[in-house]
Length: 144
Image (cartoon, rainbow, N blue to C red; front, side, top):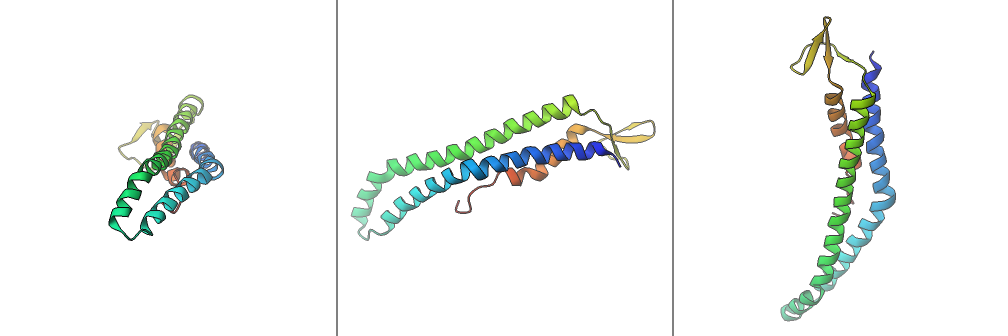
């Protein structure tokens, strides 16, 4: 068995797990607080029965709702941007430090034949493994 595949998959999992920890311990609380603020404003508007008064209240609180909505989008943008940064770091590690040939059991269009064995690119395995673990790192609160 070739250990190169496990190194690449392990690095991909580790980087995505670090992203999950950032989400769990830093972004989740901030996102939940922001979502609760937005819900408070929505509940305030829903309780008003008069259409004129509701429109007047909506005009008053629209700036605050827009502010918190923008804040929530910024948190999601930070999470996505950090994921791209982590992906690039992993890509740098894979391409520069792991030069292990990864043998594939049979020929597909992505393999290269070398001495009668089929070799697949480290880059291709990294991309696939990163895509496999991306749902772990791009979590969102359940209320979104």
